[in-house]
Every structure is written in C-alpha cells, then in structure tokens.
Image 1 (cartoon, helix red, strand yellow):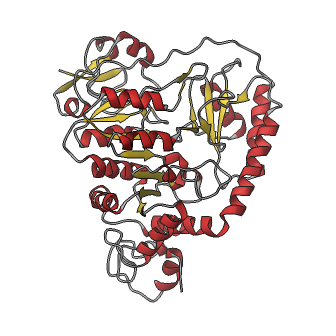
Image 2: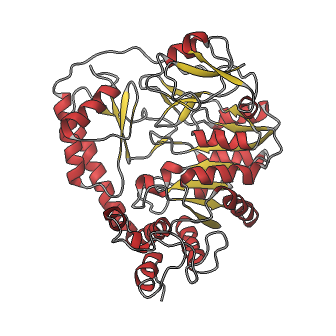
Image 3: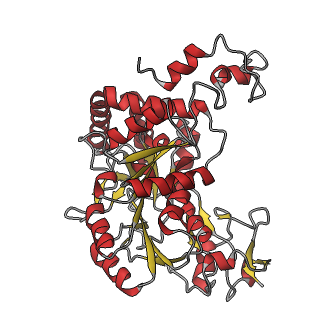
Length: 466
C-alpha cells in the first residue's frame, strides 16, 4: 500500500511507546499549544520511518515522486527552506576554491551568504530597471554574455526567476549560454514552485537545464512554512548536493514538515489540474475587477516586453496615485485587516496562492476600491536605477575583518562591514566590502525601515571596517 508520510504517522504511532526524542513524548495533553501544533504526530527518525540523511524507504519514495512531478533527475526535501538549498547548492557546484560567481544584484541574502561561505567574489550581471516602480528586470542574454566575457574566473552563475514581483527570465537561453561557457548554473526559483507541474501557468525552472533548482513550496502551494525542494539535473550533481545538504540541514528533521512536503506533492499529482484551474479562474476575475480602479492599477510589463510574468503575483502600482506603497499597506491592514506580502515606495505586493478563493480576492479588491475612491492622480518622478558601489574587498574578507560601529553621518567614505536590506524582499543594497558613498547614505535615510545584519540593535549606526 502506497501510504503517504502523514498516513504512516497517523496510523502507525498509536501502539508505540516513544522512549526517544522529542521530550513532549507525543503527549499533547501537556499543554494546549502541543495539541494545536500537532505534537501527537511529531517524531524523530525512528525505525520504520526512514532517515532524511540516507533515505531508503518512504522518504526516498516521496522524493522520487517529487522528481517525477517536476521532471528532475533527483529531488530533495528541504526542511530549512530554500535558504538551505541555496547554501548547499552553491557549495555543491562551486566548492571552496574561490574565484567569482555571476549573480543578480537583487539576489536574496542567502545567495550572498552562500558565496561568502565558499570564498566567492560576487560579480553582477547587467539588469534593466523599471523606473516608475523601482523594480529590477531579469538579466537578458546580452547582459549575461558580456558578464561571462568580462569575468573569466567565474565558477558559477546564480539566476533568480521568478523574482519577488513575478518577473520571469528566459532561463533556457541564459542557462544555455552559461553551459556553453563551461559554467554551472543554480536557479533560485523559490517563488516558482507552482510553475511547472501544470501547463496552465508559465514554464518552471527545472526544464531550463539548470544544474540545481531550488523551490519554496510554502510560498504559493499548500505546504507548511519552511518546506522546500532542491532539484538536481544529473547524478553527479545530485551526489554533491546530497553531501552538502547533510552539512546545511538539521540532523533532526521535523516529520510534520516532511509529511507536509509529501502531502503537497501528492495533492498536485492527484488534483493539480482542478486546483490550478480554480486558481486561474480566481486570478482572471481579479484582472477583470481591477479595471474598475481609477488611480491604483495592477502592474504588468509593457506589451512586447521580453520578460514573462507570473500571474499569481499582484503588483499594486501606486506610481500614478496620491498614495505610496507603505501607506496603502497600512490602510489595508488598518481598515480591512489585510496583510500584504511586501511594500515599496511605489508599489505593494499581494501574493496569491493555491489556497486563495474568490471570497478572499473579493475582500482584497473591495478594500482596494474603497481606498482608490479617496485618491487622486499624482505624477511622480522616475526612480533612478540603484547605484552599485565599488568594492574594496570581497564580502567574505570584509565579514572576517575587524569592524566598528559608527553613526550613519560618519559612514561616508568608509567600507561597509555588514549587509543592509529591506526585508522582504531580502536583497541587500549594501554589501560588506563596498565603499559607502553619499548616494548610498541618501538611500539609507535614517535607516528606520532597513535591516542591518550586525547593528540591528543600534539604531542610526552602521558597521564599517576599522
């Protein structure tokens, strides 16, 4: 009988006495939170339940099922989110020999951390800039080709697609370019786990031929937070990836998370077409309804744009309205109890997922219409593309060098010793080792809305090299 991991947990534990971890002993009567959080099914790797670090039974079968769904050579369950997969994937493909890695400037912090762990210097693939909203476009073929020619020491290319706002790169073309140059490719497709298993949405990252693809199931699909997948293109890559996952993942994985991953894969395999069709119907209704907005609008790339778009991301454009993204998000929460995924100065992002319904979308759209009625048109200046400061040293070197805290006013001309970012989306605009220019300090402002990785407990201060 091909039972799910959840069914194994629910059916096989009742007669067993847990003289092992965890300490709650599956006694969910100890406290209400244990019962609500499913402690009765919370086990460690006991006999009959396989081992994530060396799967031979139910976990191996479940991961093979995931690989078949996505069309990967091998797939791996991640219980540490996409972050664990990105860290392990970078080390699996690039090792620790130094050199350079080509990445997008708007890569997630986990990409930068992975490069630092492997002593890789980031070099940036040229990207376009959407000047009304302030969104990076994905890199194109010419940009990647130029970057490969200008950086002969490159040992890895890391691409992000879809981006946080849903823009899609031409992955087959970009991966092909990198492979012809003899460079492996990792795709951070954390936001694209729903792309691929069903033909109604745009194609996913796995068919692009990338060596490793990382997906966060929990972002858009019915799976618990922190659940993710990593896919390997070949057996040699899979073996290296598996070794590194055993470094970066916990040796005590949560079976609640593993059961959630398995359940999500089974659900997509069994009912995916129906669920995707319902999701798309909801999204189509959103687009029709949004035509009633006067000043706010749902953003789409210009017609004829070379970039695809994930229809599940609702980018609410405030660039022509008398409101900004932050104020819009505050009002939606205060007036309608709606929490958005992220905000920026010119837009706000509402993420949809397979669990959304027509009712939930109606609530969002009614709230947007109520705000829109109180707005007026307002023309705003274009946003200049972010300035990428010169780097005095690689991030891995700056992170290991002596540093001190100074006020933001004193930081001009110094070298950054920490990452600065807004989270979400978690893409730094100051990287350790970079020169702190006056323009960077203007963008930082008072630092109130930023995350500082070293001086977060010291408002108005920043870590710089001594």
